[in-house]
Length: 98
Length: 190
Image (cartoon, rainbow over all chains, first blue to last red; front, side):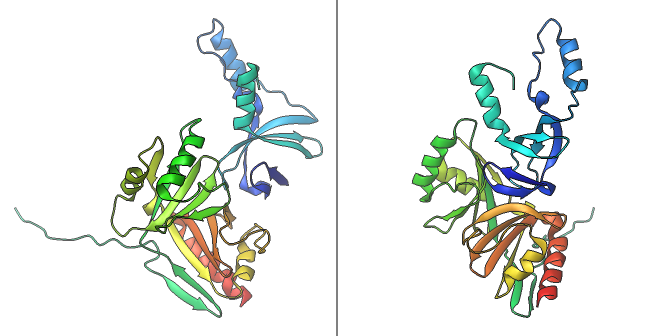
């Protein structure tokens, strides 16, 4: 599988480490009244879609960047690759979740 | 009570290894200081200007390298972090960089963490293609190009010094493995 890195171009997937759902970027507020329930969901509850999914990948054998990759779990087709840094900054600007 | 007199002698990871196989020479590059310079969050643009002004060379974009008038080679490894590689036989290389820059940035001496193996000679690209997954053709990988990748099981930074000379930077603990991988690749292609 080839991942088209936004800064480095096409790179072999062997250079990357897979982490999982981008939901991990939405860390709950630890001071919220229901923080315990939110952190439970944050840590353990995952969607498992058969189709398009947004995932976190780490370019360990490269520039050490975190990427948000939109991948079809049925076909492995990658339709979008973004720097996680840019995704988070855009979300912070719009005050939305990732 | 007895007293002991002894002295410690610094040795390079490959003990100044050098070997020529056919037209390709493998040689450890020693006495190099490697210092990482990282920008604080949202401080990238300011640091780029300081590096340009104080070191006399542009902050290299990721995948490229630049050379300062004093012979510091700047390797663009990450969007917000570069390596400065320069001859510096003594210790505390990071202090010299910090003093020169005197700016808001994170400067760390990496010299003892890396081994630098130079592979040079005609046919060097053929040997490297055995172990390196990157496109090393002159068009895709021109002189100065510097990228991190995986060779066999080893994380390697490959930097093209001239048309037939590459530097390979790997963690010191992989020095022997990198040397073996490259020797094997050169033997297979000569």
